[in-house]
Amino acid sequence: MSETKARDEITRLAKSIFDRGLTFGSSGNISQRIDDGWLMTPTGSTMGNLDPAQISKLDDDGNHLSGDKPTKENFLHMAMYEERPATGAVVHLHSTHSVAVSCLGDVDPKNVLPPITAYYVMKIGTLPLIPYFPPGDLDLAKAVREMAGKHHAVLLANHGPVVAGKSLYDAVYAMEELEETARLFLLLQGMNTRFLSSDQVIKLGNRFPT
Image 1 (cartoon, rainbow, N blue to C red):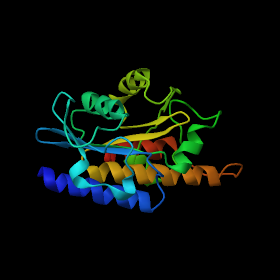
Image 2: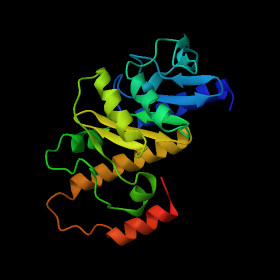
Image 3: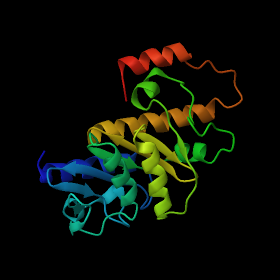
Image 4: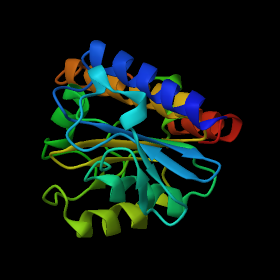
C-alpha cells in the first residue's frame, strides 16, 4: 500500500470511529505499518478531523521523520509491533464500555471478558488486563510487551483497549467487536447468562486462530 493511500485510510477510519462515539476529544490513536516505517496519529489530535498530511511518519527504528509529533502513547504501538512481527496496524481507544469494564474490581485479569459470542472469540480470543500505570509511564510499555507475544489485544486498567491486527481494517473490526462485547457484558450483569462452553471456545480457536 502506498503511503498516500495509508494516510487516507487512517483518516477515513479514524473519522468513522469518532463519529460513532468510540472515542472522544483528543483520545485514542492509530498506527499503520508502511514499507519504510510507520504512520501514527499525532499527539493532541482528534480522530474526527485528521489532516492526512499531518499524520506522523516514523522510521523503522521509531524515530520521528515528518508530520506532527506522534502520539505520546506511541510506545504502546511499538511494543505490539516489536513482539508481533505480522502486525500491520494498532488501534488504541478510550471506548466507553471497554473502559468501564477495565475499572471493575472482580474481573479475571488473565481473561477479562467471558466468551459471550462466537465473533468475540474469533476476533479477540482472550483479553488480559494490564495493571494500571499513569499515562506515558514507560513501565506500561514493558507490561504490554510482556503480554503482546501471546495476545493481540489487551485491556489497560482504568484506561482502555489496545488491539493489533494484520491490517488496519482487521484491527478496527476487532476493536469494534471488543467494545460491543464489553457493552453486552455490562448489560448482562446480574442476569443468568449462557456463555459459550470451553469446548465451543476451543473449536472456534482452532478454526479461527487470532
